[in-house]
Amino acid sequence: MVEAVVIAVGCMLVLALRFPVLARWGGFLLVVDSVGSLHPQLGHGVLISLMWLIVGLAVWLYGHLIEAYRNGFWRSWLAMHAFRLPMLRVLRPAFA
Image (cartoon, rainbow, N blue to C red; front, side):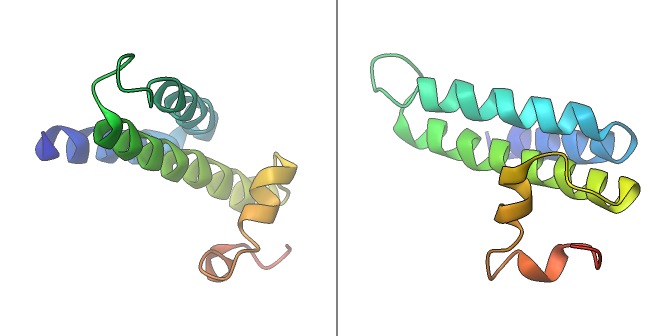
């Protein structure tokens, strides 16, 4: 199970370097799917849903970070403010 997650995240991050829009939308869809399946009877279980929620958030943020470095502006207000958080502040581009 862990190997599948590592391979999936690695493929998403490598693909995001070339197509950041796929990372943004793929991460968003992962977040929506995992939030929808947090109910114990709807999905695989709470822990697996939380794991995919974290993966989705990471891929979504990575896609926005790649876009910000390439284009010089943020694609969403939420991503701009997410990268103002203390742990993510060191990753944001110099223009922000």
